[in-house]
Image (cartoon, rainbow, N blue to C red; front, side, top):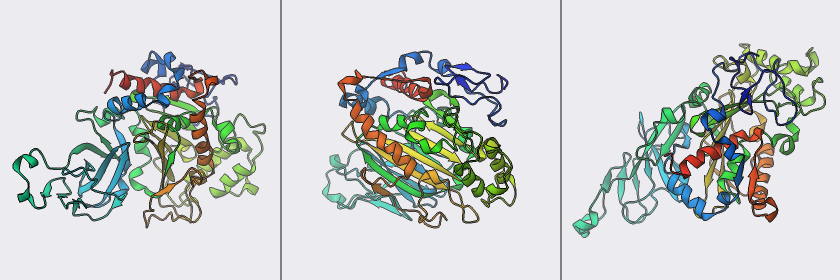
Length: 478
């Protein structure tokens, strides 16, 4: 491994050239990394945040207090770019969807074939929300159900019912819908409440090549789930911002996923990513030679008969990559345009402040964590599965929690499921994470914790999250 080629692979902010002892190391040892991992290195965390050591501990109070919640609403949420939803939900002019964040609600509408706009979801009369449903199709206008004021798709007020009964001073000011900036990019729609935001391309610059490579604009939603959770949004988000928990929370993945030695890349503005080798046994697993049942399943799924496979466990990942390169591969799609390691591995970017994605050519698991409108110890966990049309009756990766009964053809857009904590309907792996949310939130009240959380170097993404969040809450950014 040459330092210049894999400078992005770090431990304690230092490039490495060999395996590290089992004490918090989380990089891929030489000889086991794909030779095609990206050559362009990310910056070290310390380069981006010189004070990163200040965030290796963090107080629990911001995860519990109304004061912290209020500060986030003043200094964070109105300043950043936010993922509103997939562009596939508004394919034609007149299609719209609703995006809620805390006590704010937005209408995202394709106002023309080549234009997407976003408006606050509020009537300029007395504040009634204009749309109540999650989605709408072929709309011509937005009409308030209380007094029938009406706006066209571009937000222009076209009717004040019984206008002659209003005195002039009652109708002063702009009666058009209040608009927010919106960006349709790469199959996703982002908004910002900031009237003078950092340019979108600058805000996400480090991650845009990764996101673009998965061609999300070709995907469609096959599962859409929202759960109200008794935990702060940060509690949920940080659960998915470290790999340290995987061996204990998801022990079943160790025979087929390397959860310990992974690649970590950090970018400005709070964004980062982990790259998990899949089809490779964890270093925490005792038998790393035998082709176990999990690896055999993955071989079979890729069209390789395990009974005819001559290699050891160490050869499985490469064999699956080669199988996918074949024109007649089992998935029925052309895998050209993706690197070898993308054909097997889980690429896991995190978009500051509140989105993570688990990305594969066959499909993308999108998770978003939203604040509650009034309670700092409650929040919303959104899960969307976006899939590509696959051949040969193939389905997206099983860990995404898509039941066999779910239509994955893309012919219909499923309704949003509003599940409960008692029956989350998220699938085995995600429900294991889900179980941690409330427990972590409760534990933050314990006198025994001492009011402080501690983060190891396998949790650098959380350190980065808090370092970036501090820039906003302190007023130094935004």
